[in-house]
Image (cartoon, rainbow, N blue to C red):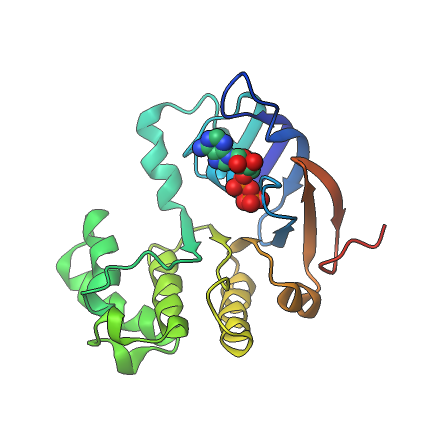
Length: 229
Ligand code: ADP
């Protein structure tokens, strides 16, 4: 699903490398945490995965395709297969839960009938049926992130990439959101989560990739937040 080979990234040639010789594979159906101190390069790695930026050097394959060689016109297709979840939700605040999801479907050209059918369905999957006509700004942080998840899965992506999805939530709500992500993963979607949420990582015991100063300092199955060695 993802393969990085001698992957390097720097933002300009006067600076040192932000990502330094990353080599890893993430297989279909995996659930992976990316952890590490602020500035370690987690967000940069996620940006590379959705081809928001191009690697300075090396190979990065997503869905078997080398992103460094991918023509620009293929990028929307790549992104349609990746659901993104953000720390700050990035929703249309003044609009309803329904509108926020419908909007994503409209952008990808879905027929009106399918939008009307599918939006309530996906809001039910994240436990938000009752708030479908509420405006986002009237909802709690946890509810807003549920909409964020619904938006991420609406186009049935093969992979979800979440950047600090619980960064603005209390521990109980964080766990609810992560349990939803786990459910999505169990149904077959690959999930990659960059996080500082120690409690969640320790509780889930999934694969953990440790980034430190732009290098992979560890990569453990059933890992915990603080690396053993
Ligand atoms: P993390 O997500 O682990 O906190 P980031 O990937 O955001 O780390 O940042 C890694 C390093 O790259 C930091 O030193 C940051 O200042 C630098 N950086 C991030 N984005 C840019 C940019 N657009 N231009 C220059 N430097 C950047």
